[in-house]
Amino acid sequence: MRTVFTAPMRYVIPSVVASAVLFASPAVASAQGIGVGARMAWVTADSDVDVDSVRFTGGQIRLLSRRWGLELSMDRKSESFELLNQKVSERPIQASLLLRIASGKVSPFLLGGPGWYQRKVELLDGPDDPDVETTEFGWHAGGGLEILPWRHFGIHGDYRYTFLDFGGDDDDDDDDEGFIGGLLPGHRGSMWTLGATVYF
Image 1 (cartoon, helix red, strand yellow):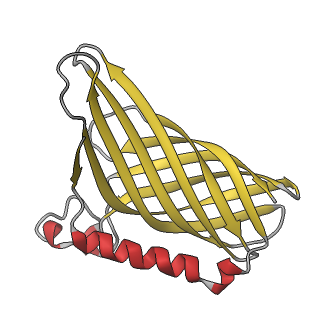
Image 2 (cartoon, helix red, strand yellow; image 1 turned 90 degrees about the vertical axis):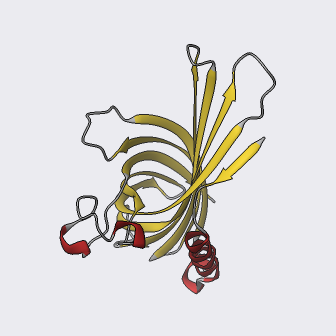
């Protein structure tokens, strides 16, 4: 298998630091509930061309306190293209810090964190060529709502921007990909998620 990492090291190092901070956060460490659940995600690329969203299925692990939380999620989609003799599998992995605006049965929240987006291409039939696997890194941020009809069960939905660009060196001369004056980050896509979590 041939693996290609397309993310520069300057993105990988901050992601490792951010993940360490998330796990070390005292608010998260004193969590009131640990949950495991399943979800569906719809991903849409930020493009001038009208393209349909792509559906993923996956799951998440949540660690929550009254005000803070940590979510680790992984989604997957696999599709075969017989005309191209290829099978393409995609697997986004995200670590999100949650800020709960309210802590009742209806709890809105903000989220953000790093993500790793893996893509694997393999032949359906033919010569025994090595598979090609790439991994991209990108930040994400958004907001959502969780409804807790019972103490140990929650249903959540959220919207998040993916591959946020905070005005890196590559985009200094291109204002069309970001917001006015580079004051706010641009993005390469967006994701809707809908899931359910059982808390212990």
